[in-house]
Image 1 (tube, rainbow, N blue to C red):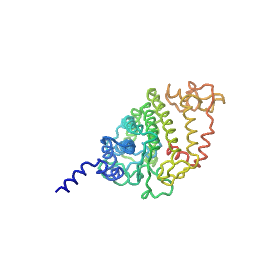
Image 2 (cartoon, rainbow, N blue to C red):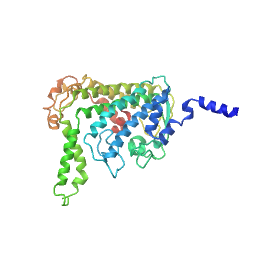
Image 3 (cartoon, rainbow, N blue to C red):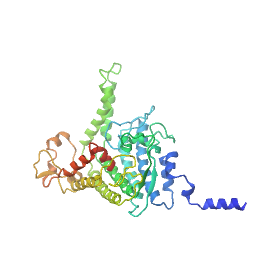
Image 4 (cartoon, one colour):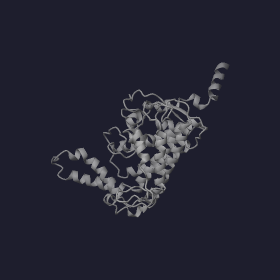
Length: 396
């Protein structure tokens, strides 16, 4: 009897993490939302658990957008817009599409990114983070039934950007996220927050409703006759999306949101610098997400030597543009003049494509001064060897 009582006492006294499944097991077996609830309830989380909480909150924000789009059957995989471009499985019984859904998604994205960032910013240079993750075991509960179904794997949703070329998506090697990656993920929360602010600045709800109503009216005309061709079925939805974006950009923007977007972009650059300073100091070589020049990328993606220095040079140029220290070259302005990007964020105007191409709509931003040189960007594109945009998304 004493032995059994002692065993019960020891088990009761063990820390909660020792009795509970590993974080990666929870993500695999229970999903993102239950794992987030578990991590948020920890009374005294260590640096790894704080990193995990930030990461899971980030993924949960993405999961919510996927769930909303699945409910309405909204698959915009052909667009290049962040978050919205991620594919969702088909829903055979979708809810009616709500034109306000896009604005609602990005309105919620802002506090979600704040919540994800908060525990990440508590992790300092000297904190030890080590979180092994198998990307092929992670999944989004897109149809909200509590189990992993076809098309819900992280790799299914995120695609080749995570796996690299020629990689078997069903048998990915584990990654080990570390202290450096906390700053990388914090930078990504600022990037998504900046994009969200820009969407809200040009609130697309009214134009989405207008486009949807007109498309329904066109389909209702002569509905008992066949289509002339397959153009509408092939390109109709894509044309609707382009039109909604175009018309939304022509609206007077909300300066409060564009100014907030600029601040997030500056903070993204600051966190990137923290990330690369930490990466440069690493001496291990264990399942690296983004390696330094002496490490290998954990999934086999080739990251050329010098990537960090070249990318930081690009970010230095971006910061100078955001602060108005150098000007954007414009085809109709001479070498000693350009466009002030800081003014564009601080004092925004509607985006009229014809006026911006001609230049008549941009004169309020044109001024004399030093133009941005393209050297750093060209150096980076040469380093990327045809994979420039993949590396831009990867490095953020």
